Length: 121
Figure 1 (cartoon, one colour):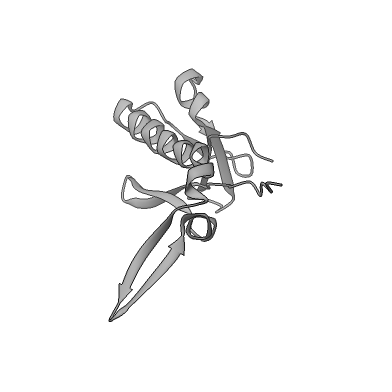
Figure 2: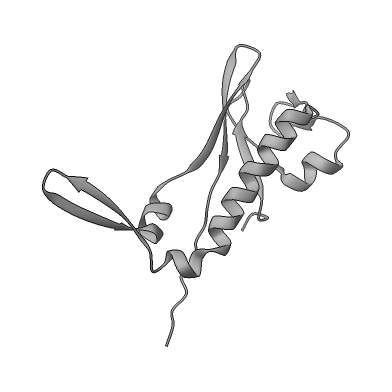
């Protein structure tokens, strides 16, 4: 299992996953490198660090709120019908992504919300 707070981008050279964490954003003074091709990604822009840190905090808050979200739903009106979708189901089917641009190249940062399967007796 990956460390909580791990981001993934697909390398713009080789398309292999490049992983880094929120902790890396604040402690690394060197670029993050693709383990496949060696392409380097500088994550030293203060605005980028702030946006990624806020995005990770939002995703982690969703994980921390799993207990209450297990009992909550989103209601969608479809014509005269009201369809309730449980948050737990919704979140298990969606990927949390942040779309950025590196130069002229679009780059998607993935952060998956992994809800645990807790059974209450």
